[in-house]
Image (cartoon, rainbow, N blue to C red):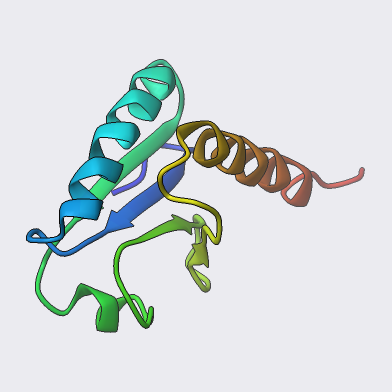
Length: 103
């Protein structure tokens, strides 16, 4: 599912939610910025997806860390493309620091 050594972000939404459709448009712009990167931006509208990922409501944007663990939710404004892009960049940068080891 993830690109090798990359990050996975998934947008969970209800297909019939008009607000989610607007967020999808913003995520397409973000995805264009990430195309040459090791970041995978996915979307999922499967029935029951909120239960599978343990989130209480939709729409939600999650960071899925490699190796499993608890998905990290974006808690900002889903209508703000710049804020979502900054959150993705911060999550990726945090991962780089967490996975560094001292010799």
